[in-house]
Length: 253
Image (cartoon, rainbow, N blue to C red; front, side):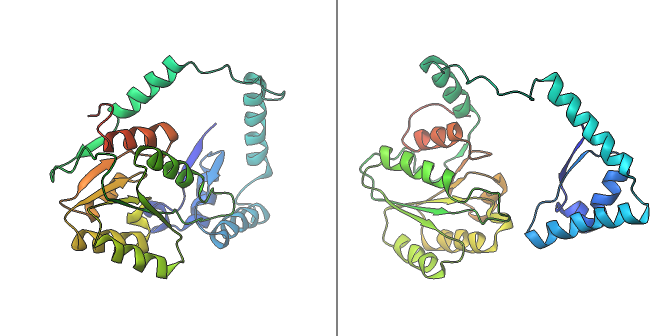
């Protein structure tokens, strides 16, 4: 099985556009395509594949071959029957996984703000990821991270910003002026203009800024001179490792 990367990546979208790229990829033998982006773009990509079938640029056999390969994978890995529930995870396994997650963090604490004591006058601003299509989760990981932060820093002021709630974004920036320490959580801010603008504004507003980038590590460039904690993804163990690092628990490289 051959699976494409996202068809809205710059090298693809800027040269071909996702619809044309999907057809070219299918002609080259790609089995499964990933048309990221909004529903209009996804529908256009599906329409381009259908038009290519109708014009003869693609053949039904191309899709039938993919179906056969998928069926073979299902048979090989016995995916045609209910899977058994996973065995319980031992506490030792969980701790080993958490230790590994801690070593995968990147920490840059040039201002010397870490570790934070539990009683720190802490403001946490979490930028929720926009939903680019109807199958993406909206707030589950943010809710999980919020619980972790509240457990570790009981007196924290925590605000989660919805993409379209402009008054809340302005209020969060204003509140940061008075906080002893502000933690900014971004989710692919380099691709989301509103998150990027807030990151730059916060960096100008306070010298006591901790930037927790839980998806793209490139977000760190938006807040030069701040303390940076990079997780390279927002899987639960990575998030917990980051919160422990804020409090001076665990180890990192």
